[in-house]
Length: 394
Image (cartoon, rainbow, N blue to C red):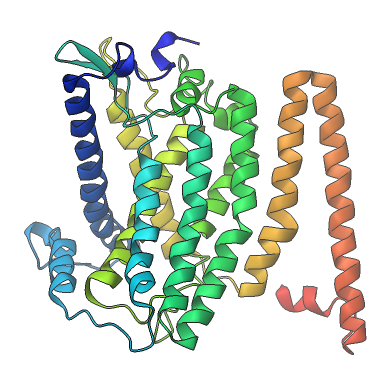
């Protein structure tokens, strides 16, 4: 693996004032990129959904309506912020930040490009590159659940509490799928460094990407799980649009509500960048006139992923809650565990991979059969004909 992808060379000669200044500048740059991308994404989604639905979309604020998200943000900022009488003051105010900060921390480990030289110091286009970068990713994903749960609990309202329980149950249900599918990437690349994961995919457009090396299915499972983790359609049961109120964030107004709104779109941008890093080669792409344009390829891949998320929102109907939980626990988790075994088996040898594939397929069939038998037995006990659930589900 090239030395180019082994950690950030900025710290090779210790910490100096110049290093601290560069590090601070990188932090501010990443923060600015994330915030601007969120403002862009709000309008990108509204424009794309309008285009897919043959509608105009926002077209009043600014040129072509592109300042509408800025106008909405200013309006929310100046709205009255109230504190419910039964709310836990400190937890109520801290909960939105527990949803917002993890998205920024996750983006900090994303390699946007190669290296640049600033004031005789070479640094990577990446804020931080810890040896346990993938663990940081999973940790931030888990912390975001606390923001949702504590928001509902601290509001002091039963509806908000029930909404937060439903939301946290959905998010926790898909955490296991995320961990197992990310583990397949770690098995293939042999490192927890996000820069090393990108480096392992370098050198061949598409062919060396992890989406190919892991057999596509782990990528699909990760994409479905991360969509449910973000509570995006068709898994947006946390905040059903046909309901009058949204659930866990019902008691929030002004800047508190704006932070939850900001966290949702920040997670969308961050997770698209994470998918690009883990599965699509990060900034890897063909050279143009002999020059590397890694950051450009990175942005192009993220924009394509963002459009796919918007396309799904505009196309697929919302799932029922029982379908959501069944998909996660009874199908995606077994499939992701099976794919981890299969990928690990093929890394050892072709024969071991085929054995793992056969055993996993047999186990999955038996598991699905056991689930059907158990469901039929419950339906008979409840006085319904066996297979009633499958017929109504169709």
